[in-house]
Image (cartoon, rainbow, N blue to C red; front, top):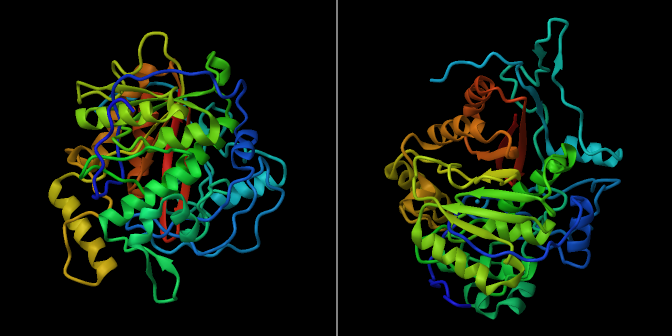
Length: 437
């Protein structure tokens, strides 16, 4: 590795990404996410991670084989334990809206389908009529997702014995939980960082990975879920016909020093990634990870020097991306982030809250003025300028109460279709929003 990324015993968990990187032969000529997933995970074990403070951890269960279309779903899955990751309206037809859930997706796959048809339809006067899922909101799910995505390899307890074989240093952090099972202290930054290093090495074949002290160290199961559900979205609504990309090309807004989405997406589906980042240290570290791991050589990293924009100068003339993805800053201030960290610490340790985050995170990774709401409204309004160069715009949404406003903003921008995909990691339920023009 030309410039070794700084390794520290402190942890970071949700990140972003920046600057320019290399290219390599395309791992796949055609886009078939299920076939790709089956090939990638054909011989892999399916033991899983432990609970982190922000994402949930599952109980021990062997991983089911990751086939493109599962004909059946296990009758029961052990529940994951809490982890311890003003514009004028455009006069256009309103977008089709459909909401998905893990259980409905699985049912569809068992019938040999790739998902349900959109629930929105046009009435005689040409307006869209939406099928409400509940009286609360058109976004309220009629069924809650149960557990991780079927192709997610982290759907059981972490096999600590296996992970210690991969990374012997992890043995220094092992301890027994009240049930006598091996685990780590998830309030310990160094332990979380070491666990993530072992997971990335075993499941994603990343041999050289580290992050600078204090940067986000992401809970991997939840990040993998976003990738797998995005693959379902691309398979259900093929946008590759609009480009010559082989394989699909994904734009990761704010990929961070950890480079987590390009790592998972490259290994699971052979996608090629462009990651963007505003933080110079994160950019340099992401470059170092790419240079140290040949499997990531198709990953490009760009430095966004104007933080007022998300897509400008990152989507260049002649570019086409099958999808964009983002894990936006959630908090609106440092104080808000520290209060949340204190509550989480108390839940983990039963002691007076600490403002130390067990997964780390720099200011630009955790908060921005106006928080998630302002960040995503800005992204949605800017996205219309790149409607012809992106198949699907997507982003995680932490606060479900923001969804009705996001839908209104997207309708004003003239989005033709909106999708909300719920995800679950143990007791934590999250979702991502997707839209296209």
